[in-house]
Picture 1 (cartoon, one colour):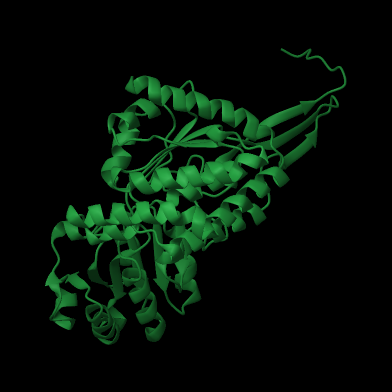
Picture 2: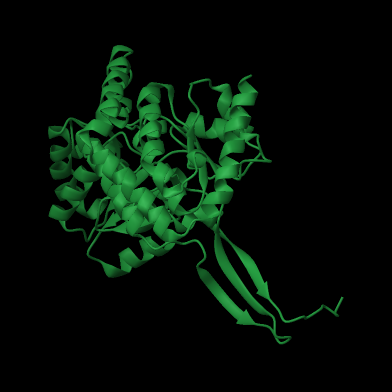
Length: 421
């Protein structure tokens, strides 16, 4: 029975994907704008807000972490943000049908490479009910169907959002299976879903490292993933101290429980005596626990000694590993060893140092003189994101509309036949 449910949802998504691929941009945009209006309608969202309040209360009662409760929360402000995301996605160019390359062969064949949808996307995520809407919106615009498997902690909210979206798009030619949520929290459903290689084209897990590894280990379909976000901020010898203070505080403290928050601070030795006490004071005032090497602790007595595994660790909390480095080379070596290919930032006024950092660091997003928190689809102009990929095939970084398509060859001839072997 369980296998039948998952297969039936995937079959419905496969049928919906065929219809979505044929929808024109105005029809898809009208549906997205309708979802946005519904997310602003107090009557339409009453059920969603009530469900979100119950899910959050249950999470607190179960003693779930503050970071998870933060990712779970959905209120009027969050709904307004989701509505804006739907509007922004509607306003973006439709990637489907885009001709990315065109040439004429010597025999007269016209060869094009054209963007087409991926097909059926299995979206597997924890908490974050916003993903339910963002994933559905991006899949709809890019002509894909989605099978959504959210976490148990947000099941009521996700089901209410699914009903809201289905109602909103009903009059716009969008098939009801365009975004179907698995209506329960059976962990085996994840395995069942990602093994349907005859129906599902790609799986995108979004959550903790354990979830992502479990999906990758069981999947028979391609998986776009990032295991964790170990993001560094390197304060160079030539950094502007005021800029460094504000960037580090924002990268660590604005939302410590998300994947683009900073987890390690590297400070050049030539600036450390001036920079570290000031930056540490700002962080400690905001409740951050610092874990540093010997040089850090000599300058910041309130810092704890860093354990060997604190470097390369994703804390997802108000905890920051700190290290003093002797040079840019040492900073690059540290990031190469402990980074997770997610987001790395440099603060410097030395253009040569910035150029080296941006060229040599291997990460899905490299940042100069700004917070790591900008590695986000909305902040980078994608409208919304379905996730951040730290794999390199076929996307690297935030995945928006273009990353939810692939290209195929379209060949037009006038009766040519092949004669060469």
